[in-house]
Amino acid sequence: SGDGSGDGSGDGSGDGSGDGHQGGFGNEVKKWWDSPEGKDDVKTYTISLIFALALRFFIIEPRYIPSLSMYPSFQVGDQLAVEKVTKRIRPQRRGEVVVFNPPASFREMVFDGGSEGKKKAKEALIKRVVAIEGDEVRVKGGSLYINGEVQDEPFTAEKALYDFGPVKVPQGQLLVLGDNRNHSLDGHIWGFLPRSNVIGRAVYIYWPPWRFGNEGMF
Image (tube, rainbow, N blue to C red):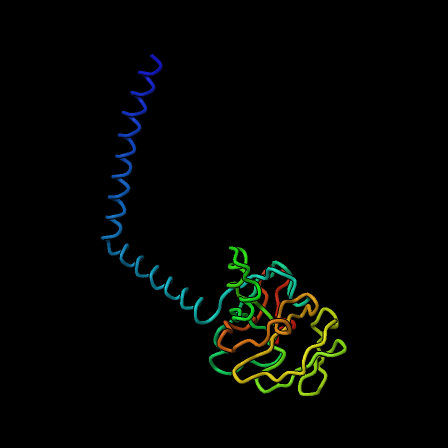
């Protein structure tokens, strides 16, 4: 009795009902698709999608801070707007915060043959431009020197506990360092960054709301 009742009602009513609803939904979608309103909606959605993708790939994109290498300027969890227009108009400037694809020297350093190392080797990085092509750079006694002049860097977490250089930045290259100087895997370890690797320039924090702003980004 139990088997007859359960199987009969489940197969008969359940399948029939499902096919009916599915057909009805499909007919409604087709009707909407063929209608003038549907065609207008599709056109609007398509234009909106193209605009959003163009905005994302060519003008501005969001980025997330995963570590403390740029502390205190950025904290873990900060979400930034990164603009991509300026790099097409002029070269990067000292003091700007840039997001970039890691250079070959970084990828070779972190790739250990495992999946985690492979993933890390491909992740975009964020650092501050401290020197541009032609600059002579040196870190000594905790301070950064560019072309022999000590730099005022109020955005750093602390004085550097390492010495670096002097080195001259080659043509088409940048030297980038983390604001958290003693806790950043950056240019003083893996070398220079090709300008062509730069994705864009960080312009402001938009999340969380209480961190909104662009202090220390320029």
